Amino acid sequence: MLQPLREELARFCLRPPRVVLSLLGEAAVGTGALRLALDHVEEQLFAVERTVTARR
Image (cartoon, rainbow, N blue to C red; front, side, top):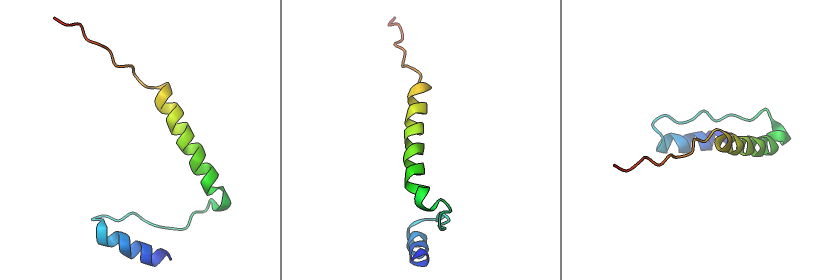
């Protein structure tokens, strides 16, 4: 299954990504969900509020 995917990506990408089996096994989905949640929290935590500049 990996080789056909690699070939299909090569057709559409100038620099296709490296596609390999994950070492995470059954933990892959949970780890990905946790990473997405952490990305959202970090984005909200470190977001800089847009400031309104004074009109002249």
